[in-house]
Length: 173
Image 1 (tube, one colour):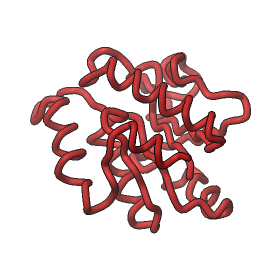
Image 2 (cartoon, rainbow, N blue to C red):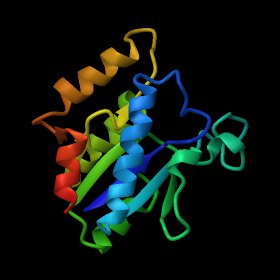
Image 3 (tube, rainbow, N blue to C red):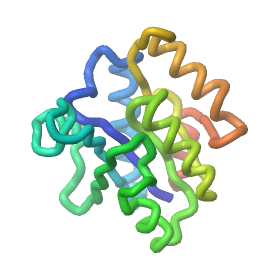
């Protein structure tokens, strides 16, 4: 089992996110418990490309300080929504014979959704802990509506197991 922390970059990790403080608290706890239980914590960063705000080499591209990776933790960079496409992550996990992944991070309706569905397609057993992913309002739905749509309707019993942080920590042991 590994803990995957997706796109928790400085530019987009802010209080515009739905349940921001709860998200930060839950993710910090999951990272801490994963480390305590000797689970690998793997980070993924999104690069929108040259000339964009979220671009490799900019301050906003780096991981949010409260989730900072340790020097021995892997970071994969991506240019599309799925953490598995073209990053080397899929090959890395298969080489290590990983079957179970805890998926966390940003944003629920973009990269988390794509990663959950692609993880399912690649045969991984995934867990999405409650309030360990989040998003912002868009012109169609509020951040809360997006969060609830994916976590409570779209993913559950189709693509992943959605459960509490406490239940997720229990699975780490």
